[in-house]
Length: 240
Image (cartoon, rainbow, N blue to C red; front, top):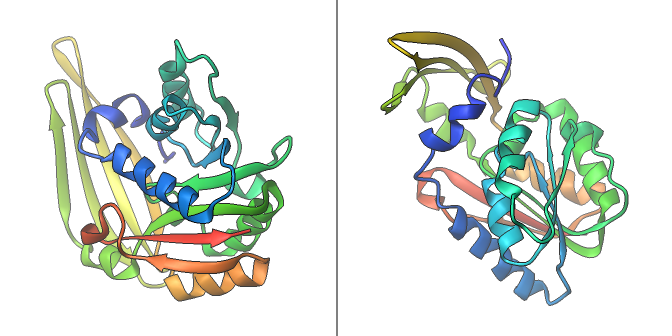
């Protein structure tokens, strides 16, 4: 089953409680802390581009990258009316290839959890290549403890014309949480069912810190004082 294919047109409707402005505020606070000039940003694993849109409307030039064509189509629909619309690229994170460097790269809302452990060295290598010297990398993960706490749970997200039912099973052999997701959408008088499988890997924060430092990033910080920090989210910041 594919990931973020059938969910894409419903994603924003089902995630209306995500505090995107708080994420953007956190990034801007880190830019100010760094003290450099931050104008051109990369939004890696941008999804439906809501955060891309928030940052664009705050005056940043944006490059938005995602491996899902369907999610990028949703993202692109939000750029109408922007003086400088984002550049949207359909790329896998481990195959990231930009035309030059950016001032900072961000990856939000579990984007890094979707990357298999064996791909992380290449992802970080490419991010180091495309973030300018002195620039920032900021991403968040769901902690392994949080992901394990979801094991065996069943969740329901419902709106008037869509219902999303998902089951969480933690596989220690990976280690990762696997979501079996069924999406029921209203089609006239009938309902259509589609299925997806999502895998989020349980990356150990200390291992990520070590890998970033080995790749050439420095001043790597683990930041629990972050948006949704009370919901198992941890931000990691690093300087190129």
